[in-house]
Length: 162
Image (cartoon, rainbow, N blue to C red; front, side):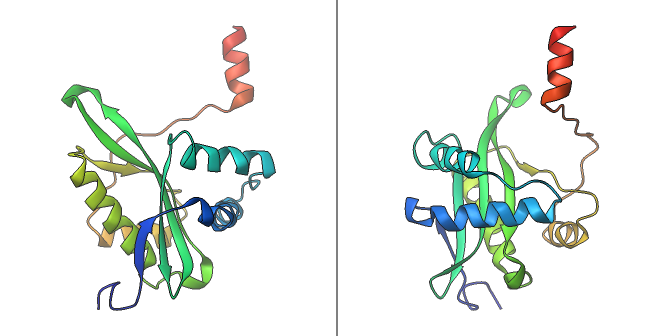
């Protein structure tokens, strides 16, 4: 059974979807054990998507209800002189997990990457998020050898002052 058979449709987010996007972003933050975005951060996120277009958003919906979203942007694969798509956030509301919405979003994102002649589609996942890891591996994604590092504001400040 395909996601279309289940009534799941993926489309580009519109400004009218903003409230749902923020609700999903806050749900993701809680799931990842992080502080959810405050109102200013939420407004900035929507501005990036709908005004400056620094970030793009797809939504999965069924029966006129948004079930999930994918937030992504273009990056550069410098050695190959091609772009790639980076999936920043993929979230499906808890009650819709297992519905096919995540798969539908990833399939739509793969089509988007192909249409842009992107070299690859990449993302990161928390090592304890076994449900997401199972989905990604079922779809043919491979874990890379690269280790991701990050530096938060406090550490950046210390480094900048050194």
